[in-house]
Image 1 (tube, rainbow, N blue to C red):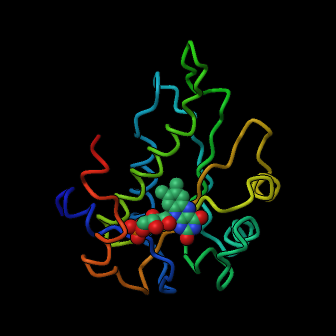
Image 2 (cartoon, protein in one colour; image 1 turned 90 degrees about the vertical axis):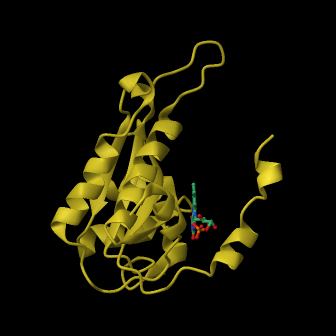
Length: 175
Ligand SMILES: Cc1cc2nc3c(=O)[nH]c(=O)nc-3n(C[C@H](O)[C@H](O)[C@H](O)COP(=O)(O)O)c2cc1C
């Protein structure tokens, strides 16, 4: 699939089949995240792979709004992307810490790789990072930033017109 087609095929999937994600596909998705660019090449992102009932349950405790069948949206895999904020590049002048940007690139690359492999995802930020840190025993300098649910879709993408209606118009997007 071309990258253009991938960007049109991706959507936020909130219902998943019970079918497991093949280990080689999960491996390829993790690898797509691992090689993502980061500011100053500092690679501050760390990943928690929740692919067992115990780990999915831990993720669900942090994202309880989306709990379904012992997982977040019932997904067979939940990837928790965390940032070691103190390892990230900091811009001189305004002190901007790039860890959220770096971690989001990791999640984005994993998300698009998943779609290429016939899977779907939902990017989730509405969760409690303190609960996630506690459940996974993460150190104080490891900030849980985003979850990415992952699996075979049990719902379907909206029609193109409906998707377009929810996007920002081109003339507002380009300044
Ligand atoms: C940074 C980020 C955080 C998000 N957090 C959530 C979330 O917590 N729960 C959720 O259901 N969707 C979440 N989403 C999905 C968005 O709601 C979704 O991408 C948007 O509505 C567009 O729909 P689409 O992804 O189907 O194109 C998030 C997306 C992004 C990029």
